Length: 231
Image 1 (cartoon, rainbow, N blue to C red):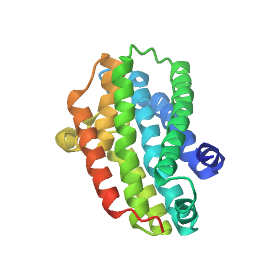
Image 2 (cartoon, rainbow, N blue to C red):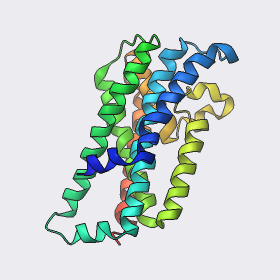
Image 3 (tube, helix red, strand yellow):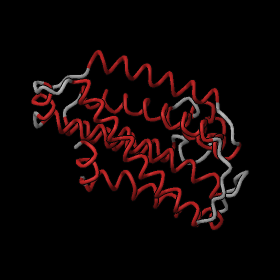
């Protein structure tokens, strides 16, 4: 049910698929024209970054907005008093996220391959990045949704998503941010982007970035457990 609700929501589909695909196509086609000098071919750098962007959109922005309005309309309160245990409800949200991410990976990878992407990935490293990235952003999305009103959650989730997409090191490597690169690499967006690029370009684990994601996931989960309200 959670998966169907997520896929039927037009706004969430825009965040989950349309924006990442447009970012990939525009980035690859526009990189040469605007003179962006990357260490690897643009499609090899941008496709893992856009996969990370897709994870961020689904796990953070879409989850936060959907959960915020479920609180507003009393859906969470009614489900919380149903025979379905709250752990079952949260498990359903996790399964819905993973289902949508499978669709995102298939679609974005197909677009990347069509643009000339020829990766040599370390699949366990890529899966580790996806799982930890999902955990980090999902915990932060639930933190926002559980603490703020639905309208405030909508505004804040979209604003944070836009800021991280533009300046959070998720699409472009953190090295491209000059002196701020070290700070950007500590953001969950920068860590996820770096971990994905390392997995798909170098075929290796990005240990430091994975530790950063694990730390964000642990902090987000702890704060959400203390503050989340079902009503």
